[in-house]
Amino acid sequence: MQGLVPSYTKLGMASLLPNKELSRVKDSDDILVDGQVSSSIKIENYYYNKQIQILLQLSMMIYTK
Image 1 (cartoon, rainbow, N blue to C red):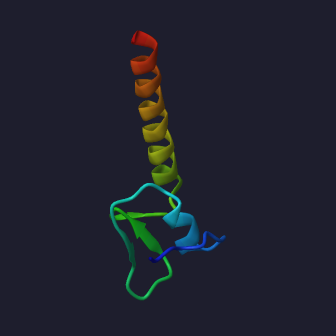
Image 2 (image 1 turned 135 degrees about the vertical axis):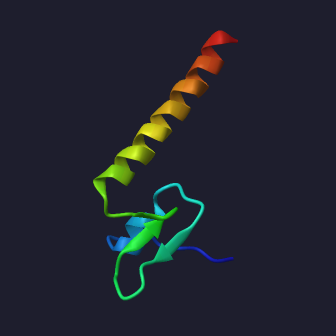
Image 3 (image 1 turned 90 degrees about the horizontal axis):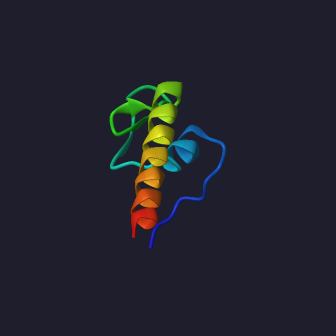
């Protein structure tokens, strides 16, 4: 079994984001999360908002039962 111990590195922080694919930009230390540079505030906000939407949907499913 493989795992990644999170740390404050670009790879460590990127690995904490939900993703289908992590990759490295050639000749750079940037990490791509599903094709987007992980250090971008836009991608962090995108995943944050996506998680909020999922939580709201789940809470509505529980509330309506």
